[in-house]
Image (cartoon, rainbow, N blue to C red; front, side, top):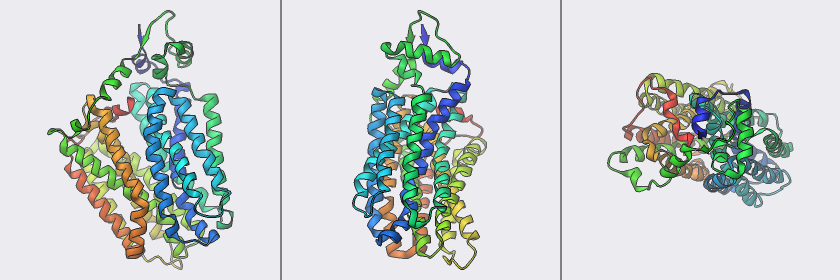
Length: 451
């Protein structure tokens, strides 16, 4: 009898597994790239379609709502259809409506296209993350998952870089690229990406596929062996955890703190991303700088996400998160006092944007590891799922909060407002009692993503 999870954990990390993980990670990079396409194109639409920024506040809400629905729906379908097939379907579900946007000339058709694309984009994350974990031995799993999550700001960085070179009169090129690239990714997945061995292990009719896959991994299953997956059975037990159990007396404040920190941090991340290019465009900065603003916002996110994981290990999660969240508050206040004057050097402004993006993104990324640490094994998957799901509400309302701040207080008040939301995130972090101690191995903080 072969326990497939134990076989993978005890086996080597083959080159084929590494290639498959790289292909799966492309879907997460796509998440970061595509999520920012609308924000990068709003200044172009305003110029070419002769509309106002207020016309786009509900477009963003619809897109994020689609992502929230897609995350849940395709997360469930991934267990039925398979990670690989569901991931490819989600990539194409995003690609087709995104290509269609390139042929629009007004705002209303954006609503259904952004919602449908959001469904596909939302479904990419749970299935890609599951593949990252299920294709990787235990000793390498934290590396694979961490690098995958960092793909979100990496994708945003690429989006900002590409958008900086797209003139407003050729805005269609941004959506043609945003739609064509995922189609290419889906084709690569079809030929290279394997199915999850854990998914195959519990389906006797797929035994031949499992045998071929494990042989490619360099860890063949002995002929005639019975295959089981104990990790799959453990996951079914975890799924029965009730919502009320997450607010039991022993972890009530941990759950409240995690939910609050996820909500206010995602509100801050997407609130800034939605409107930063538009703010700079309306301040008469050149198009190359409005695009590069999100490039630097995300560069800071990549650096801080990796640095934040290292600080968790060295200083513990409480100290690291307090410093990053507090720094995000100060960086947001710093931007609020920088004059938005295109006749002056933009260096100081871009440095402040990179610092703000780095610190906010850093908090968002490493909160996943903390959530995995806070909840015990029997409720870990449910705990993380509910915390992230509640946090998604912050991203959904972020376009409305951003436009409200701009209308009520202008660009300076906009950044002060997101200093306040990060202060609320900091307050939520302080409510959490079960922080990771110093020098804990990061692999112990990420097991939730194995299920």
